[in-house]
Length: 437
Image (cartoon, rainbow, N blue to C red; front, side, top):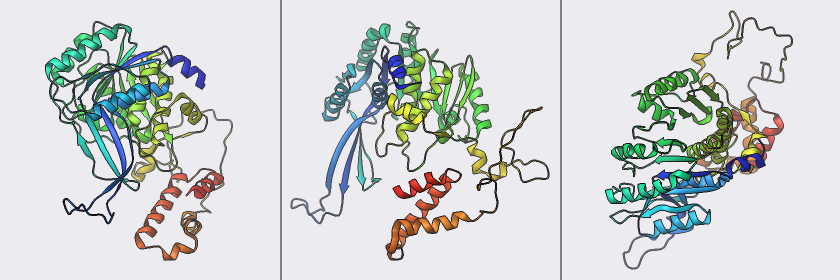
């Protein structure tokens, strides 16, 4: 699908987001300043380059706006404080409707995550408001605002982030009763710990949440067969469509019309998965609300999530232009569980040829292509060690032997990871990556 077609599909939509809204605040932190407070006698730390963005349910709304959804509305609570005012300001900048984002009349601190960055590493986070308890009158006011908007909404995304969420369990049932009066509005629920007591909603789960729903000790998101088995089990348990996010292994979906698997996108270089789930559910909900087939919705959602993982030190959003650009130049991950665990390998009898997928019988093959540039050949075995040495010399030059131990080991690990991630791609692509490093 082209960029203009995506914009055209999303532009007429009106989508709401209800749940836990927060403000993500990033800033640079310097602890070794040499400055001491005259008043306290304690060391003074310096902050710099402060920036803020909507987090939690706010990032879902931001992703919908970035996709070009015509009207995005938010429903929830903020406090009468600087974090709440900044959150409203950021929403207004993106033309997100905040009539349903109410200032609590009872004790409530706007939720904010303050994230100090020491260089490129996030230091101890400082949280505000994550343990709020919404008063019943404030919740009723939010529901009243939502009920006025529901007749016009094409979809509603329900988001739960906090340990003490806005939509606690008894409130979820009340919300479900309200939503049943508006069956035209498609529901999508992304809930970390609450039971999904909604009729007709599509649930978005990751592997850990799916394991929790089924009381499993562990679920390997890379194991295709295991994920498919438990996804179908959860579908029978809840009677609801389920979208399963699996990190680098992509997406799975089980619904009334069948099941689909969308392989993960191969990404080279550093990634930041924070916010990828928000981008995924936003894009999937927008596609489904626009009437796209499930398969196409999965493709777009998968690409949107991958776009955001390339945006470091931020939650990130994905626009139609970015989604289309990645779709035109990306590869996919297949059977990562087999790649990660040699014990799962299955070979043709009396051979060293691994069978990744069973061959249909009869296969009726007429042609075969053999690639002997190193993928199948054993003559180049050991090239990784040579490449590692060359890369380190190219990057550090004459300084290689002068590096301190920590820097030397960090460089070695970065190069080894790059070699492992790019094995099998074109050599020119590897050299481009080396140039960037």
